[in-house]
Length: 398
Image 1 (spheres, rainbow, N blue to C red):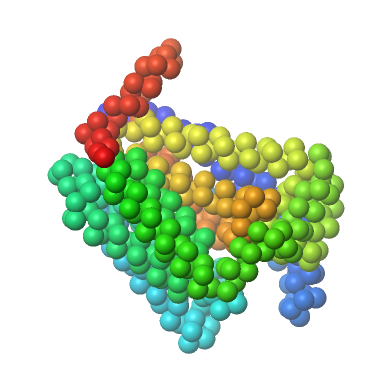
Image 2 (cartoon, rainbow, N blue to C red):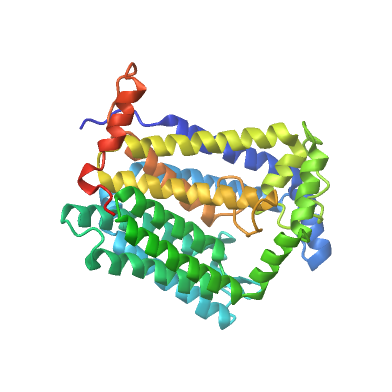
């Protein structure tokens, strides 16, 4: 198959979201800095968060380009080693955090990232784990499909081991249920599209549900979030809804946000969508949702048109990764689902999450240059027929 033009729309949507992020954080960064200084006694300048976010976006753009340029085959070759490195780093974060080592950042007992003093940014190894699971998981499904062992012990032992380590190292040790759910969604989507037998898929789903309930019930803060959501008594959600209510249809305007002055928790990160709703109103928030919808649709279209099964499943994993973040973040801010502290891709302030998501999307753009070309006049019934036969060799078995 000859290489053709890559899907530039995917890159355009990412750049648009990053640009919106930069504008919003420039507008509210000073207010957030003042609120943080008053609450913690720190001495952030009014431009501190803005300039740090510029650095994060610059590195994320570089990561997007790197994901596009570095050959998929090279990364896939080291996927297994990459996973074990990420698992070791996750364990190291927990151990060093409990030893109160200064190179690890902890928040309310949850130690999730290394602190890199030279650039004053953090590195969360769970983000590397997401990339490695997307690569290694897609390889496992493809290789076991080719050998006729999909659904056999030789598949489930390594596949289940990846999730078990995620649940222990990330869900239990790092107290990061959000990332655990994201990785679970990636693995389930890859398994479903890859053609895992339906009965085995159902059993795996049941086991995950049991693990999820266990992780929730054994952590007091998670139980409080769940009960607070059920009763409607949640300070964070209440102030998030106030943001949307204040914004109305057109918003209060750039630089006029009140909620970012210490009322809405995590204004720069988890609550960035609520700030957008306050600043630019329902229309602005709606346009952000449309941008995400276009981005996710184009990624899924690449997955559908990619003939190589491992590359197609990698795109499915990236789709599941991003849509899980979007649903959990926006759903939590609107009070539709229980609140879970998780970033909104390419919008939230930060470094590691945005960089690795950009790198993954860059890989999808690379894959889009090798997809099967379709005739522009091809009718929809023909396209449906192609989708139905794509995984004929790995068809679902009951």
